[in-house]
Length: 494
Image (tube, rainbow, N blue to C red; front, top):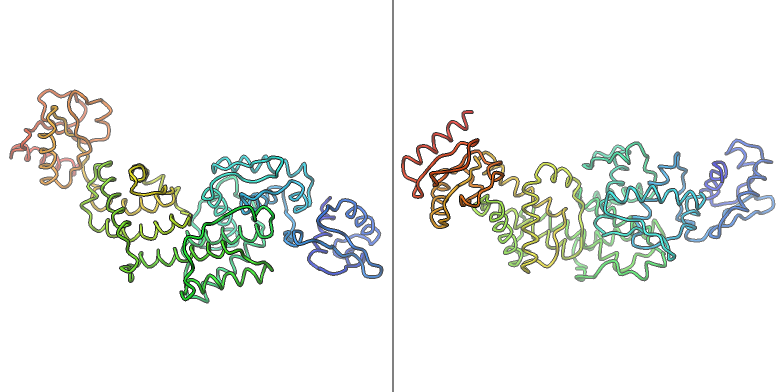
């Protein structure tokens, strides 16, 4: 079909009535005779899910089944726009399958064009650890749900950026820049979320807004798909408290969705919306430290303490001494554990920035969390999104307490007791020194000196020549303290 054919079909779909050849001719700026020829060609090319009906003196009517009624009602100005829309559709229905024929019918393009679209989409998906899987059963996107939601969220953020919505934090990837996101459902979901927030006097923050947005879009696109019946998308972890404000908000969203799309949400979808909203309310409650005692769990409190201890051991920074860090982190992790245990994978729009700017702390937390899981203190993996948020708490503590500390290495003989005695004396006497390493002389490598500013050694013969070195006794006498203090003053003066 060429562009005029597609335009005629759009008019018939929008009008939902019989339209005469004369009316169509005016709308597409051709003669009625051309319309008669076009309609014959369209009738021959139409696929199984829609039928062109002609009635004498009334005109033409596009009769379609329920699947066709869900088709988008606009044209794409370029191939890239269609491909972006198709990718969002495939992400929305994942892991449900569709066929090339159905996609071809959806977008009114040939199956060969769809195959070219697949090649483009597959290249994009690889950047997000996803794969377009094609087999005899159908086509679908393969990957974990969080990766799918990450890419969906980026496309949604592209849309929000293009319509001038200031509520955005994602950096738009180069391969999406300049491509218009055309999808009526995004506008409708945005309107629903806006109305819900106004009505219930709530303000969803970015992670929950995007998670809810992705979930609603998936529910719309998956509705009525045969494969959906074979998939258990969400476990029911707890029954909904029907007397709670969260339940009322959930039912309000469900009602709006069902009326707008003439659909019936399945029970698992309703529970998903409830869990997302409850996680948001819990997060707000803990963030503001409002009436939190009733929601505090001893196992989560112990987990927060264990994480701080393990990060301290792995990094060498004494985070265990920061009581405010433990308090803030404990509140945060109560909401986080609820999200993880209910499989609510929130989107972290600043994750890329966190990894780029705070990679040192991020990796320590990721390693520490994995160790705690291996030891059985936590039964689920922390996602990178969640580790990113935890990183911010530790980074604040680091900036407040350790950022201006001088990193040093203690070089000693093999005597473990004396080296640790020395390190404790240094910590107590010099709070602006950070002991990064304590290494016996026979095990030391040149690379150990690279990220320190000072070497304190109990060994008369040492191997370093390009770093300041202070020779001290293991008991750290007054003369030793004076030498270290002098170095510290000179260091900060410089």
